[in-house]
Image (tube, rainbow, N blue to C red):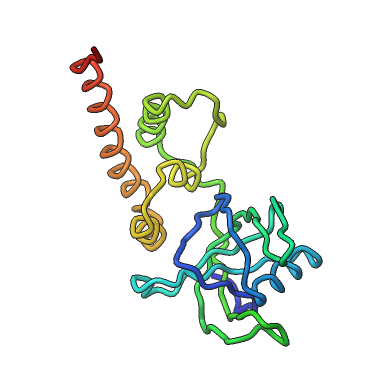
Length: 195
């Protein structure tokens, strides 16, 4: 992990994974100010995972991708991308002289060039086929595989807090379960016919 860095923080009960695109609706004045600063200064900010299970105090480093819609009252619909994961040392009520919170964090510097082993990758391609996804990247890193699985927030947390050498096994188990469900759905289509 890196040294402590002071960044803007947006506490939310979501846990984006590296590479994931997340839509947000910005309406509170303090977060409208954060959006302005992110847009003008091209600054990143943290989404701190504000949930009771977050004993390890982790969050996601986000970067503004695009503003989809601006509303007359100053609200906005935006898309942000997760660039890294961080550990929170301290959450502060305000960031410097701003209205929005800040925090002292340590970036994980996740390895986006971490690719799944053959067993996981082959099962993942089978999973995509069952979901009828034929247009996709040629190769997926471990985080992209996790993103495609649409993990629930508890599983996202477990995935990130599992030691790196066991993350593939974690995803393999989740994927086996989802593949089983999809295969059962396919079989059930053969058993029921509409009149």
